[in-house]
Length: 364
Image 1 (spheres, rainbow, N blue to C red):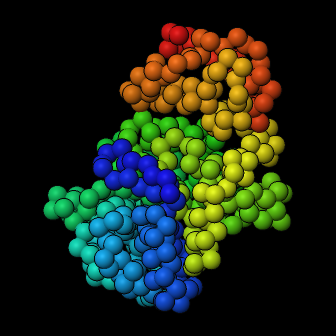
Image 2: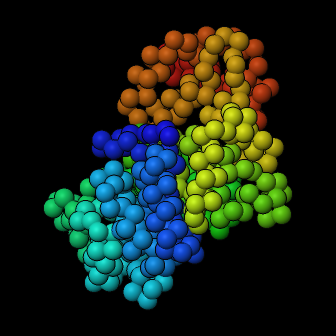
Image 3: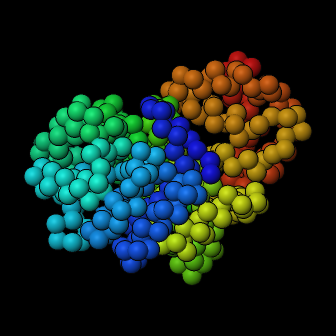
């Protein structure tokens, strides 16, 4: 297992976590066994949101004895009063739902308390006006919530919440369909979404990734917007390469799905390589570096992907990015403009032009 540290915290989070939107389809015994098997494999991050109420009791059973080592996402706005998932901004309903979830989970604290599924400014306004955010801040001051977080599909709403300076984690939908304006939740332009990821990294707000496979659509050539299928491992690597991302949370239905996900750690670099995406993406998308590393190796020893990432993060306001760049042994000034990277870039980025730009920006 690989881990990444929460910027505003001490938590070391597994790069693959559990999305449990579909796990309610499994028998209770298998839900328990799946959570236990995930923990034994090194997974320590669980998004508790499900399509129905029935997984919560098995969650609690599985967490006994390991709760202190598992980080939970609990959503303020997910309502299970009917036995099925519902969404609400009602303070009283949210209070009852969270109390019920904590009871089922057999815990008295929440690692990440989420402002749940806010996709429009009006939803955010109601959430605040109804007193839910006040409740969350009160629970945080009491130590019941360790970190306040946000789940959204909308870059503009994410920006509004980032402006408030409240959150330490954001759950956002990242995949090669949404980032290139394909799919139900493909909200915001390619550049708006890329800017959001960089802003999160610059502000020290981690990202947990939902819908990395677009609900399985990207894995099926007959349904993929590109007419070609990607693999789970390509989609996971694609998300993990985005600035700010800590963990990817694919939806699982049981132990078989979990076992397939864990195969990512034994997959070769070639099996994780998503550079084929460059032949899928619409030509209308403005070319930009996605840090895939497909341009390597540079004859002069430049880490072109990392240089690009530090540059983009610095432009986004990350005060530490300049320092990281300056510590590189080989900087953009070493570029001889040979064009090797330009020829290899699957996204048609003029990396030689970028190296000139970056050299002028950092001064070397």
